[in-house]
Amino acid sequence: MAMEPIVNKVAESGILSLDLETFLPKSPVQVFDLKEHLFMGLILKEKDFRAALLATDWEVYRNQHVAITCTADAIIPMWANMLVAAYLQPLAASVHFGSAEKVTQDILLENLTSLQVENYQDQRVVIKGCGEQPVSEAAYVAATRLLRPVAKSIMYGEPCSTVPIFKKKI
Image (cartoon, rainbow, N blue to C red; front, side, top):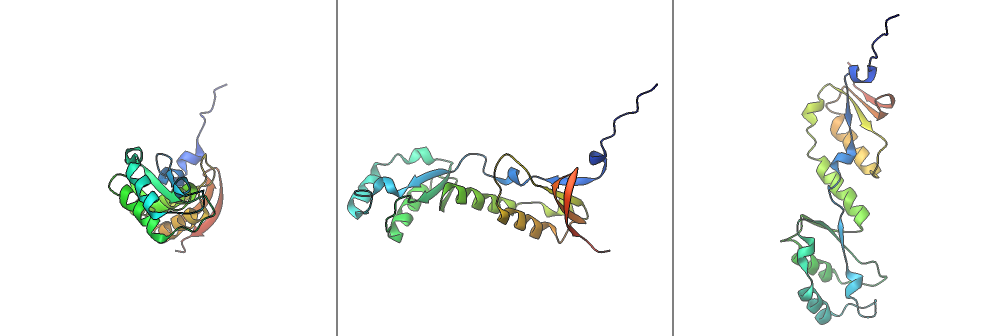
């Protein structure tokens, strides 16, 4: 009795898979925490802060995505964030304000704007749903917004098990 060849129906379906994780930054976001430069963990003294920034080894941030934040419950003057950004800008790959998680998602959204939507023209697209790293709802909304004008259909999930999102009416 001859064995029938195994057919990968998913591969033959012509569905293009889009994995939003590929748009995440390639290395972890580095955090510059202003808390480390506060007097008694509460107060930012301008003279001491400026001296601390001058003494900082900024090279550790070279070519890194950096999140400027303050994890202490302190009132930080706006200029302090700006001053840190001014030191980081010539070295860092990018400089943002917020937690590492927020900045990671911001970078994902920024990277998603480079999506070559013309590659999805009149295609059936499944936006991958499960992965190793968290992807925000905002990224799924952005991907849908970018693909809807060009895709034949958009689905969510895995090619073998999808939830229909959009189908172009012919």
